[in-house]
Amino acid sequence: MTEKREHKRADIDISGRFKVPDISEEFFETTTINLSPEGICFRSGLKISKGQEVHLAIQIKDEEEIFLMTKVVWALKLDDFDLYRIGVKIVKSNSEDEKKFFDFFCQQTIVLSDQRKKILIVDDEKDLVTLLNAHFEKAGYETFTASDGEEAYQKYLTESPDLVILDLKMPKLNGFEVCRKIRRESKDESTPIIMLTALQDDADRLVGKVVGAQKYMTKPFKIEELLREVEWLIPS
Image 1 (cartoon, rainbow, N blue to C red):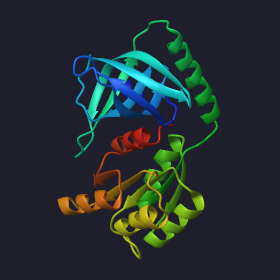
Image 2 (image 1 turned 180 degrees about the vertical axis):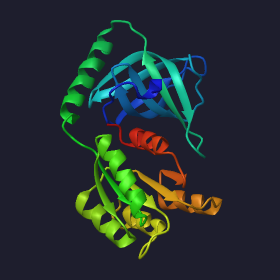
Image 3 (image 1 turned 90 degrees about the vertical axis):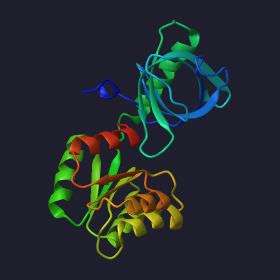
């Protein structure tokens, strides 16, 4: 297990700013996507290296912002985007803001502890659906399945999943069409969509991004890689 997956996280999107003294004295806006007692994960348009110091300003209430001193422990470039996923560890300082952060994290994890995240798995390959369903159930997710595009969109409407795993080539409606309906007809820009396909055409990847898929994975793929992507998109 890597350092990034060792600790329990809270699935919270909160506003924040960061500054890297080695790069600039300017604060940049970001969204904190994962919280844990050991640290924070956020997205950055700047390339930040392991070991660099980062000053974080996190808005935990409407009128309250806390400031934390952190150090980068890992950094990943997001596929085909000029964005980086940065993991930082709080530098222990026993400050009042640090205590407020831990209190905030504990409150959020208590609220979220009884909520199982829901995943909609859409594919007309029954064996693959059965395999994915078993792995995600074992990982603690609640799953729903569909075998064609029309059924997928109806399940999306009735079940309100936290994430959709969507095959590209399906009967009735293909993956692009389902993704487009979710993004445009339902005006849902926030539910993560991972698109699966046996094709490796760059044009298909481009279309997938245009219609709103967060991730494009080519079959065959490793279950561990898919689980890791799901964990980052909807942390458990």
